[in-house]
Structures are given as C-alpha cells and as structure tokens.
Image (tube, rainbow, N blue to C red):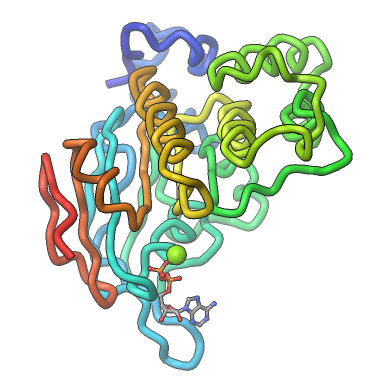
Length: 268
Ligand SMILES: Nc1ncnc2c1ncn2[C@@H]1O[C@H](COP(=O)(O)OP(=O)(O)O)[C@@H](O)[C@H]1O
Ligand SMILES: [Mg+2]
C-alpha cells in the first residue's frame, strides 16, 4: 500500500523510510501519526461530513467522498453550493461540524492546531486570485514558500528551478510578477504549490480570472501534474474544461453531492 507510482519523478524522497520498514504495522502507524500523508487506498475521505457555519448557515450536508491516490476529480456546482467549504475542510481551514475527514491515511477531523502546517505543506493549493509577492522575482516567490518552511538553501536552489521548469517558466525566473502575463502568474502559483512536492493539489477556480487560452494551459498543467501521480482536486465553473477532461466529476447542489460520475459531464 505504500508503493510509489512509476514515473513519479519529482516525488523522489517523499517517503522518508525504506519500504522494508513499512511492512511493520507499528512503524507504519507511527509514520501516519507524524503527519506524513501516505498512499493509503484512499487519498481523501469524507464520511458523513456536514459543515454548519455560525448563524446556522448549512454549507455542506452529509457528504461522503472517496478520492483515490492519483485521481483527477472536478468538483462543480453553482455559486454558494459549498465547493470552497469542501476545499477548506481538506486544508483544515475549517473544521467539520459532523463526520470524519481522512487525508492520506491521516484522520484530520480533530487535527491539533500545531499539526496544521504539517498537513498544509503536503497539499498544494491554487486559488482564483493569484497571490504573488510583487516585490519578489518569480524565483524568489517560489523560494519564499520553502524559506518560511525552513528548507535549506541547498534544497531551495535544487527545487525552485525544477518546479519553474515544470510550468515552463525557466527562462523568466528573474522577472517580477508585473512583467509577466496573468496566465504566467497563475503558472507561478502552480509552481509554488508544487514546491513541497505535495501528494494532493487542490485548485479552487484556478481559471476564474483567465481567458480561455490561458485557462487551457493551466488545465494542461494540472493534467501533467496529475500524470506525475499527484491527486488533483479541481473546483471549476468552466463547462468546456470539465467536458473536455473526461475525468471524474462530482456535482454539488445546495451542499449535497447530487452526482458523482467516473467520466462525467458538466450537468448544471
Ligand atoms: N465563513 C462563513 N460563515 C458563514 N457562512 C459562510 C462562510 N463561508 C461560506 N459561507 C456560506 O456557505 C455557503 C457555501 O459557501 P462556499 O463554500 O463558499 O460555496 P461555493 O464555493 O460553492 O461558492 C454559502 O451560502 C456561503 O454564504
Ligand atoms: Mg467558491
């Protein structure tokens, strides 16, 4: 259950202990307790999860989900149906009011505050409004994410060019965000989200501010990242994108999963 997938090159070094040790149940459990997301049989599990915000605003009702390692899942639904809430629950930005959430073998339902950074480092996040630091170059923007996590300079100088190459911006590393297009800025955000070699990439409306050509580029990039073995959760409104993907589509309406199809279409 701990095997890495073939061709998963940028995940090298992800599993910190040799596979032989992982056969020991006790040690396996210890690895999970240290907050290392693992390729358990499911990567994201929601079991009877509800989220009620203060003021009795019910955002999600009794959600059951099983997302497997390496899956590419689109979450669609109209505005205000609970998609971002679902993303926030995965990132432990919000806590479920009911139910249980397990991410990479780690039950995060009652995650301790001090454990949250460990979880977040293992989940790449891309939002609609690209938040790059304007006074830092592209290189420095990505490096910064690693610096704050206490990575060594050696590791930083190894990883940053790698991830900027994945997104095709290796020739522009010394530019500032204002010197590149919106589509390129979003690609830097994707590069930054890959800096910690996440097991999961969550993208909440990543193409919301992009034209159709740049949107396609971003989706192609997410597919490439998924091909490396990363589980991708894409929240989107874009009917064309979802229909072209021919991957799993989960449709949410008023906080309820109304459809979950293997090779889905945008239904709404
Ligand atoms: N922090 C919050 N406090 C109260 N209600 C919220 C909060 N965040 C979201 N909501 C409500 O929960 C519902 C789902 O919101 P959200 O998850 O952002 O939907 P979506 O991303 O699908 O547009 C909405 O009715 C929204 O107004
Ligand atoms: Mg949203």
